[in-house]
Amino acid sequence: MHFKERPWSFFEKFPQGERPGLYGAYCYDPYLERLIQTKWSSHIKKMGLNHHVILGNEVTADWLDENLASLDLFGGQDSYMILNGEEISAPVQEHILNLDIEEKYLFISFAKSGKFFTKLCKSEGKIFTMEAPKFWESDKLLDFLSRELAISLNSKIRTYLLTNITHEVGSFVNALKLIRIHFGNKNIALQELSEIIPPSRMDIFHLASLFGNKNKREFFHKLIDLEVSQKEWLSFFNFMIGHLLKLSGNPTGKSQYERDLAYQKRLWKLDEIKNEIRLFGELQKEAKGGNLKEKLRLVYLKDY
Image (cartoon, rainbow, N blue to C red):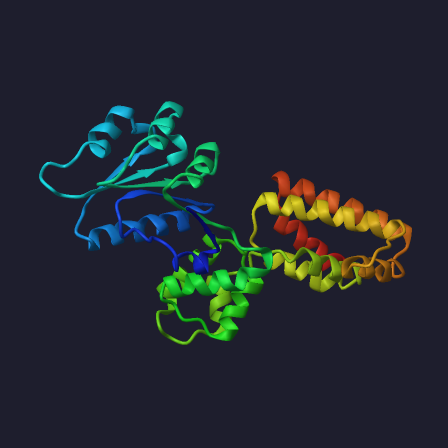
């Protein structure tokens, strides 16, 4: 039996480990994967069972036979957790699929989905997949993580996090932990929060709209405040060059972005577009190995 759920509803069905047998879970994120493992271990220990942990690349057919296929003459029950299930060798994978587990608990944790996990999903065991949220479900992810970490967020702080940091589990968890460390249960002023958790999320369409509408001063001010990776900078500057190339053409379409392009085109001359494309090319070079922030400040002060 295979269950697929988003993080905030996953634990409504997991662990369901009341009876011995085969269990498994795949999770797309290392923090959430660890959370799954922790909740399984806690569940097993509450049942008073002996709990054993082994890595996938350490599992052998002999180990399986010795620990899972043989009966316990002393009447006890044991639980075995295999981490990094994707690293179990092919012969051992087949051994697991053919193993009749009746007296023990076997839980296999996967950091990657593959052929073996797919086969397990079709087996007699209870197998779980934690699905990544859709891009419009980031608010539910943040709310779920804040509940797990027992950190209460008021509407202003919640909005700040959703607006200014990357919508990934790691970014949300780090931000929530920083809030706990620095503020505890105290009320948080947005100014204080922005000093501890500076903006690190690029809303590329909003930024492109600012620049396309010639709100360049606000555009560069936002870029100066951002703290993002080199990869994100390069991707963004490449996006902006593409945006400007579209302005030099004949943008058409029914999406909001395409309608914005058609409006912005009226504000630009071709020579201006060429100059800005050249600028973003220079910013790409600075992002690769120069002093990008200094370049951004110079552009901000010089031209805008």
